[in-house]
Image (cartoon, rainbow, N blue to C red):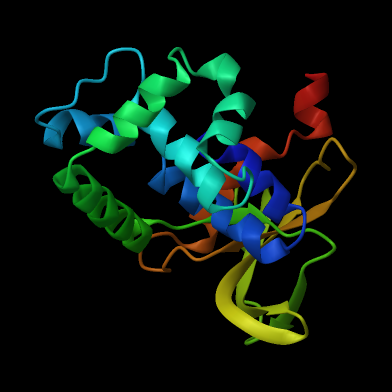
Length: 209
């Protein structure tokens, strides 16, 4: 994943960053970046060094994972099939149109991206409404309510908290899970959010079947 090592460092420090991970993965997918480059670039050829690899390398520098390009190159050397000289040449010859399109690409995808992640014990919530009536699904009973996610004691983003009371506990023995999502209700009701997320919680019943 693009910027995977950088994200892991921040994810471990704040539950708010965990909620953003899916959106960032969507925005910076390698295939989308390479397709962007192929579509816009006129003079620079991909050859062995992919545009997505260059973005990941520079991301490590910008986010402080590496002090400079050479340091980032050394960290990623096993995944960069090109010399350091080739990397510098690639950076120097990236056209302004490509950079501009990259900015537009990130802005457009951030606008369209949503997340749905499981709530963990370290995530503090401030209820902003009552639980809705429960709805039956094929895995259990589902309800939801709006909540504020608290960071440093302060409510920051308002999201949906979808609660699932499972017919069969998860592999860890949890009989109930909560999913935090920012998907608009008119695009996915609570039961749909639960179904979309269900593949991430292996139940004891499924693991023994």
